[in-house]
Image (cartoon, rainbow over all chains, first blue to last red; front, side, top):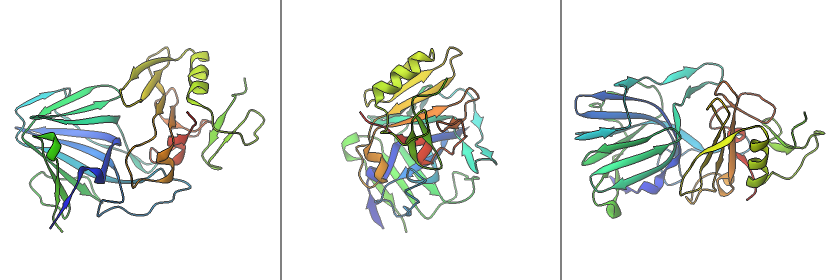
Length: 154
Length: 111
């Protein structure tokens, strides 16, 4: 087990593909831009691609308050022509504040009150039940923001 | 009307109106170009993201700052632009739909 910092993922150039609200949990489906710090970072074609992107889920549980996500579920949609999932919006910035995470997109401000969030990188597939462990995940204690750390279980 | 600059997803370069390679446009060049099309800036962030929409409210252009994060690709060190067509698809400067992780969807520009 090793500690992985938040610098392993560049949220600000990542994409929101969909979400699901289940009871007091919220799962955001994302296409995440990884940095070389991340164990699942892979070299990419620098002449054709901007960076190393991986599919992932950002899981918040338990959520005590939620703003900015009105529908209960939006499933990621596959674009066969471009061979990629269509994004709902781009993530501009993410803020880890005391007791909540705020995600600013082009279209909305999503605020999720939750004591801890978990980020799971899934290289294939999209059906990611929140109770199924994955080989790599990061835990983000939301408070205080200065001590955000992620844990990778290998 | 010929566009003053277009990013080509195949060459990975900016082209001028006659097809020649040119220097990447600046953010101000892009703002002026977007304004000439009747697009307006609809959203900005403290980090420098800038979104422009057409008269129908459809997102058409986004200027992005250079990333401050290390360990990304070489083009992350430059400011970039993303363009969309009126159907909401990301396109290169020639109207070709491009994938969101493609370099054409993060075309490098100058400050």
